[in-house]
Length: 273
Image (cartoon, rainbow, N blue to C red):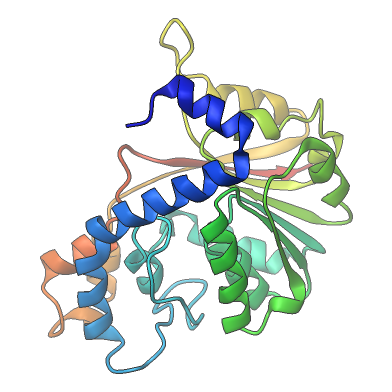
């Protein structure tokens, strides 16, 4: 475990090298944690040399990578990844955006999935993780949408404000930095954009959870805000019995759908008024 003080020093002094080293360590950990389940799922559902594709959900049919990504890949192959947002994603696909800004794109599940589902918007995808950026570009190539997806590293307040033009959607999953980056005082055009935000809660000095409260207060006057909370996958298991029965046990399938979250997750879907 890296000393926190040394970690901050390394991140400030050599941010590029820091992110490469962090990315390598995380991929090594993810391979050890999820590799066996990934191989089993692939052998069962994508035998031989077939390319994995998303099996269900809004991005069904999207070709996908077969390697170590940020966290477990099997929920994305199954199409259950963040399925709490399925109605929101369907609404997003139908709203006809000019631009999509994906903050924290990882290997491109949303950036590429939304570009496939709606051929209109230009997509700008950001991630500090260098392996994720490489994978996002490759996933875009795999699905023939590279011409509409640009992948970058860090996103700053001025850059985000510049990108919000016309009818814009911002999708944010930035590990707590949503409280820093999604600030309309520094990014005024955020008040004109629709926002899908994964909230990473933290407590103030008194122990009060404050991330959701801060984000909600910032956009309460300019947006209508809904909330989604993570749930188990029992409904999906029942609905899609024909997909997995006879191929994999219920217990194995439930494990494959596990997104390995340490606590319940929630999202804010904020539509500009």
